Image (tube, rainbow, N blue to C red; front, side):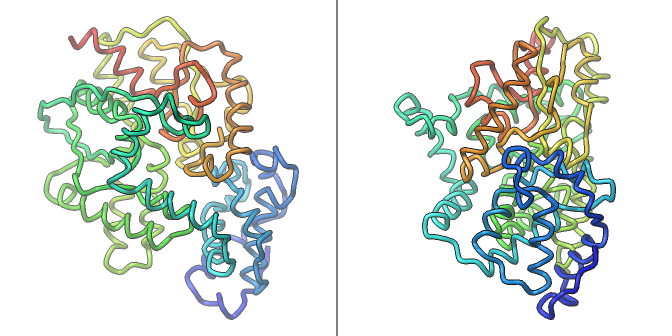
Amino acid sequence: MQTNLSPEFKNTPEGLEAEAILRKCVHCGFCNATCPTYQLLGDELDGPRGRIYLVKQMLEGAEPTRKTQLHLDRCLTCRNCETTCPSGVQYGALVDIGRNIMERKVERGAGSKALRSALKQGLTSPLFAPAMKLGQALRPLLPAALKDKVPARQDAGRWPTREHVRKVLLLAGCVQPAMAPNINSATARVLDAAGVQTVVAGKAGCCGGVKFHLNDQDGGRDHMRANIDAWWPYVEHDGVEAIVMNASGCGVTVREYGHHLQHDPAYAAKARRISALTCDLSEMLPMIVQALQGKVKPGAGLLAFHPPCTLQHGQQLRGGVERFLGELGFRVSRAPAESHLCCGSAGTYSVLHPGMAKQLRDRKLGHLGQLEPQAIISANIGCITHLQSGTTTPVRHWIEVLDAAMQPAAA
């Protein structure tokens, strides 16, 4: 696809990057076939191909409108289209550029501004944890829409105290410790049983994804720089072998620090190294399986696995969880249909677009329910909370299920 950049974007970093991405576009429309919003709405402008044209028009000088804003906002950024695209179009990077331009040029209404500000500041604030505790205490009294976002209180369990030669850093995350603290503790316990010590840098916080995907890209990059500063002493002097992500949404963002900070002379090289050290927890499963053979007692029930978009599309990691849990004796299966489609959580999407998010959630739960599972497992706090709001079947992180199964052997 040829484009003629307007003088505003010619020879700028965002213009040059967008132009390079657009050259790969071939109009085929394969992406629409796997786009959740296009499947629901059937509108060309609510599919990747239409949104690409909207971004292209902005880059060529057309003034974006509220309609442009609506169609770009509706994108879940699930990146299923990237998996489908035969030309390797980096749609996620292109839509980030388009949203950044649109945010500068189209004024939002007061309500939208207030909600987005509350999400950007609230989810990344130190006050989020006490606010969540209060919400959990009052949960029975909350209206249904709010109760969906407040999971039942969870015991974190013990954090292992043994030291090991092998060490990894773990990003605790901004919302996960308050909403589902057992995920991080279970991660530390399983890695401890495999001979690896989990270290958390106290000053590391939000990965940057919350603000970045709410179009506060400068604010998102500030979080990225703060995390690099927090991790750097461990990387430089303490010999950690990896930075492990047990929330696949954070994993996508941290793996792209090198891209997001490529034009920052003070952080570009460090960001590339951080990205190179980052891995999803599922990538450690081969080592975990080897260490835990014979020490795990899985239940007989079937586990239905929902692979988050951030795992299978954003990080292009597929099949590892089912395969390696299977080697430990678990029965794991994906939904019989549409396992590649988004559940509708998508970070803050379920708050900003609750109607569409619930349609996608219920569609996903319908397919998972056909398996009649004992539990649903996933790999991202957003997916877990969103799916749990629509079913009585327990929804858990796969590491929690593995942790629980090894407890009798570890006792």
